[in-house]
Amino acid sequence: MFNRTLAFVWLMALSLVGLNGSFSTAEAKSCIAKCKKLKGAKKKSCKKACRSKKKDARKDKKQAKKEKKANTKAGKAGSAPNADPKCSARCRKFKGKERRTCMSSCRQSKKTERKTEKAAEKAEDAGLSVMTPEEEAEEERAEDEADAAEDAAADAEETKDEQEAMMAEAKAEAQEMADEMKASAAEETGMNFSHNARGTGVKKSGQFDLDAMLEKDRKRANAIHAKLKKQKPKEKAKLKKGRAEYIKARKALKKTYKSKLKALKSNRKDARKKARAKRRSDRKASRKIKNRKARKAKRKEARQTFRNARKNLRKKYRKDRRALRSDYRIKRSKIRKKWRKTKRDYRSFRRKLQKAAFQAKIMPKIVTLLKPKILEALEQMDMNGGGAGKAGASAIGGASTGSISDRDVLKFFLKYKIWEAVDPPIKKQFNKLMTNLWKALDKVKTTLSTSLVSSVGSIPGAGGALAAVASTTLDAVYGAAKDGVNQALEKVRVNLQNKILDGILDAALGGASSGKMPSTAALTKAGDKAGDKVSNKARGGYKSALKKAKGAAKKALKDITATATAQGEAQLKEDREMAQAEVEALED
Image 1: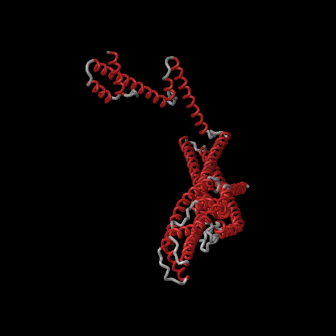
Image 2: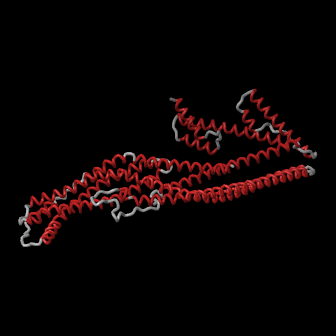
């Protein structure tokens, strides 16, 4: 228990006096004051530790004073001091004979150093050069090597800065290209789809031909593509001319920059030679001074003058080099911006041409894709008249016709009555049919558009822009098809209404001529029979067209993807050729 207490007290005392061994009077008082707070054995042990540490500190202080006094006496006597303090500190690690040997070697090295200094001073007093010509040449060579190393480091830094600038500009150019492609994804190629006002491709029976409907638009797309294709050689010539101007300007700028940098280095080298020559002449002049102190001061002044001159020359050179490099970068950036603008203009034209070509090629294939979807929906429509036959028969079933002797007047009267009853249910039925038809086909079109955009958009090179063109073309073709199909269904509705009206009218006139009006059931049967003929004929036409369309639609999506792939590969190839031509021209 006592040992633990003693250890604790010693640790506390050490923490109070610190680890550096110094123990001032104030610290001693503080130590004793803290010991007073303790009790019993702890207090006694603490005070003992404080006194012991104070005693050791006094011994160390006395020893330091003795060493200082000895060094001062040795300096006044003109002899070497006992030893170098750093060397003595290393010797304290040893003990006994080893320590004495170490201290002796320290004193001897100090004496040797002092003798060398005295010999140099005597040589200077005698007018002799301390440095041999070989040593001076070695010093100049070392300075030249330092200058070369500095230039190499500056060149490396400049190369690194240039590479970073080129990388930054390349990233900026890539970002610009991406932004342009994104902005021009839905850009028009110059063609707007026309409205089918004349009903082109729609027959009287209600049958329609999508290819005939869009023939005019397809011809216009081909004409736009042909016109842009003719402009391509002219645009390529502009690009080639812009590249040649860019390379010529880059080479001229690089040549001017290198010549200026070379002149800057040459001027710095000449200025340093002059500074060295001045230092040598000043040192030579100092040898003629007989007073040693004045001679040393003169040599020191010459050395300081040389160092200041070298420092100022270095600062001036670096400042001029930075200014030259900054000017070079600004001019190079302007040249690159002009060239990048030329490339952007050409790429913009190329995208326009690419989209026009793609639109002209895929329009028939998109028609082929849409046709079976529309025909399948039409073939499943129930165009039975919506009870129009019964409504028409009921309208004239109880009509009094005995007072009308003229057959033409009777026919007009009955026709008007039947039309007035037949028209509303047929219109209502067809409006409902068309609403349901386009609601279903809109979903089909959305699915088809997603599939088309996904397959085309995954193609490297031009997939994004071509996917947007494919989607836009699909929407336009779908809109034109919707317009044509609505016109076809309107003709089916009119035909159905006329046939039902004629069927009821013929049956009614046959009975009226014999003096007796047929029953409502007979008139209804006659009207429905006539309406079924029109409905069956229209649906039969859609069914036969559907069989042909299904076979052609299987390869349409693959053909569109293949067309987009071919255009994407062509664009990537052209981009590689442009980049290779630029690199080769710059390396030449």
